[in-house]
Image (cartoon, rainbow, N blue to C red; front, side, top):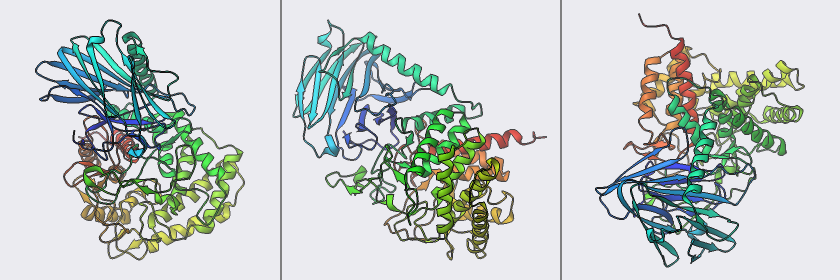
Length: 611
């Protein structure tokens, strides 16, 4: 088999881990027992050594299509052949809220028309393919064991149909074939840390697991209060974000994948299976706007714990990212025996940016806390003490050079976006203190806020470019600053802002797609270029809508939707070819999509009717 394109995948999960399923029926990315654990299947990053769980028609010449059962995370891959039509239905029953090593990946095989013969390959590669394993075949299934870890494969069948399946061990991989007639339903359940040996699962029990999982997801989606123009699109983004949530802690991973390239063949191949403070903060804002209050409250709780548990230091009271359980050990290393996606090396696991100073995270955190407060979720005493300590630290350090939002590896600088979000942190902290009569150094925070405002207006503005720029003393544009109006720093119709957006349109915008910045003009310590950044493209839509350019905003938004994949998922970037690149799916992109759609919806509703 050859590795599928990044966009040729759907996502399933159980709120503690997730798997990518290709349109060819292969699970080629799956980590256990958590998002940030070593992979069991990793063929997406090395077709030969990564491992996979593949199900496909026995004969070639088939056509495949993929879809979700509406309003669920249950994925259907359909195979159409001359002999019949078959389906593989993939899902993971939601895990309990407590951390567990026990997870079930369910693969239901159905013949819906004619006849269908499936071939099945189960080829795990424990610990990114670094650990050996042994395979034991039984009458009811198989067990794959490596050290203390085990995967148990249960068979789904009826007592009298052993003839339907044939299995053999090839090396340490399992190969099977299944012949089905119209109406037949069989399948496999892959379970980690199973309580017992493989067992036969009856079809009725299998269907019950399917029905319960569908009902669970539909009950969750029903909590949404969004009724706007792009309801189905936003609900798919919300489900995707839910799939990337680690339920025991409430943290959301930036993406469930690692090592997918920002440039094919390049070195910008990062591990995104961690929780960024920035992403968690945006999650609170976006999900509250959709009406998912429980999730927003949980994310806010995760953020509050991180704020309360750290002692202030020169590098700040918050790390920029954490493991899903809240720990901070993210040592970066490379998987040197893997070839990488389409030869993109090195494949990195862990993340060396974890120790960077990125001042913008404090503004994002305080902005989400303030937004939640306005929706009725007030901080308790301990929460306010953490905020108060954070702001006192920031008052001493906001004018410090930093690595910035894009996690550049070219040294610390005075990034305008970082200063902007420090202004947001002080502004929201002052508002919280004065609204609720909370104690704090409001006078000092006000002085810092006003000093930042003056500094950004003086040093962050380039008369030559007629725009706010990436860093003080430079002439480089940066699309992170598209948020200046949305956070209230500048009025959407201010001539300085209108001029800034116009400058970005000339240099960073190509059709509806937006680059972060020009690496050639602002070296970031890395080789190569990258694609347009989908987060920034949706931020551009939001900025246009706030400026009143509604026709432009709607056209840009609709064009952006065409870059999503066949089931509405977005990666981090779009390459010059139009293909999706970077880790997939990416939370930040889906969060920005939600915000852009809601902002644009409101602006269109408020606009006067055409004459």
